[in-house]
Image (cartoon, rainbow, N blue to C red):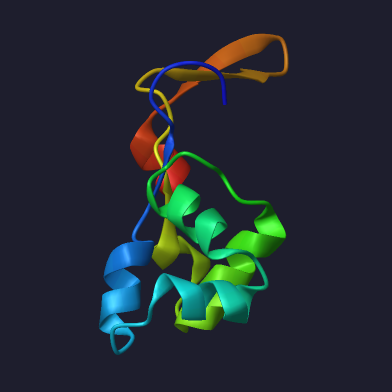
Length: 94
């Protein structure tokens, strides 16, 4: 991910509240990680593996995209053939 602001955010805390005030400990048990891991993910200090991200979404009963959101840099360039193409955030979300 590099230095600076993380490009991934999450709504775990709000989703836990929506799920009958699920505690971090209960979520951690259902996902198979420690409570400290859930705390670190919630606060954006740790990005989970793809599998753990799916487990979190499953435990909360929501799609992955409702739990985690990726925010690409404002100007994101990808190589396309012999030229570079500018990809906006809107295009990435489609």
